[in-house]
Image (cartoon, rainbow, N blue to C red; front, side, top):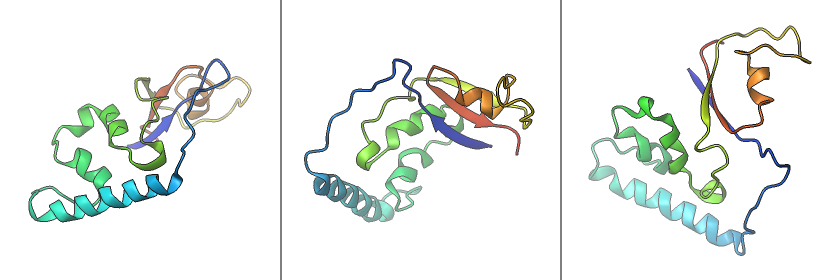
Length: 123
C-alpha cells in the first residue's frame, strides 16, 4: 500500500509564516537527527531516523496513519493542511476520462476540494 499526503486549499490562498532564519530550521533538523542517533542504544525500536522513530515503536501505526503528520521535522514541521483530512482509497488504476474522472481513481482524488489522505490499493 502506498501513501500520498495531499492537501488543497479550497479558498485559493493559504496563511503561512515566513521563516526568519532558515539556518535555524536546518540546525533543528540536524539536532533531531543527532538526538535520534544517540537514542539508538536506549530504544529497542530506534532507527536513527527521527521520522521513523516517531511511529515505528507503535505496533499499530497502520491503524492511525494520520499520526504520521505529527512526525514531520524541518520546514514542513508546522504544516497542517491535510493532517485532519478524510481518507480516500484509490481502488481503480483506470485513467480513461481525464476531464471527468470516476470515483476510486487517483485523478478523482486529487481534484477534490477538501484535504485528503490518499491511499492506493492498486499499482
